[in-house]
Image 1 (cartoon, rainbow, N blue to C red):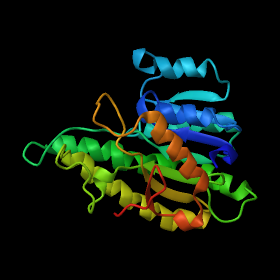
Image 2: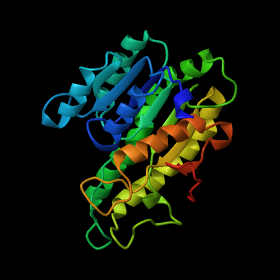
Image 3: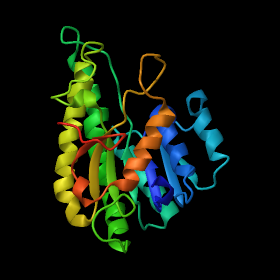
Image 4: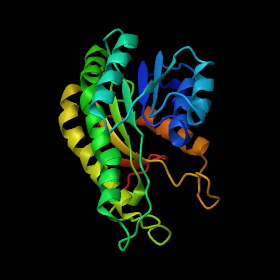
Length: 255
């Protein structure tokens, strides 16, 4: 189904490595790739951005932008740059992927760590979604499609089953209290967005990408497996999925 997935433009935050970079590759590799793929990162040069810049040299439709999701001025500049590429018209799909994962159990978690987690994982997606809302609205208004879909206009928040109050995934392995709380709050943000943004024709959903390998051999999925599933799910989402919490296979998850 992902082979039929057509998106005019997509922006992915936190794209210099890991899941974000793999998602960018996945969008670029679609049979009908987006006209524009915007990959954002804290820094656009240096060793940490080497893979993304190499990818940029191979794809004329890939634009690498600096974006700090905790900095309103940085977000404003990114919006202006995106507008310059799309002609001030539209952004079809916003993927809030940038995240901060700090270790901390109930005995060691600090206020500073929790505040930093919320700033990136909850407030960041809120601020970025607010800033790009006009372009998302335009995409929805110009689309001939009925109902809601990621091909029309959508906000996708990359969440975690670790933020599911019922599942509490991997609690025995890692508590990460601040991270879990910030992702639970992101889930609530997604639900709030879905109740308002649906009136503009914009689909909102949060997705758990699975337990992805990031330097550990214990994890279940590779980045490629996770993002292949995510893009397949995005292609399938419709109005009935608005405001839901799903995983990379499309399964509904409990809040």
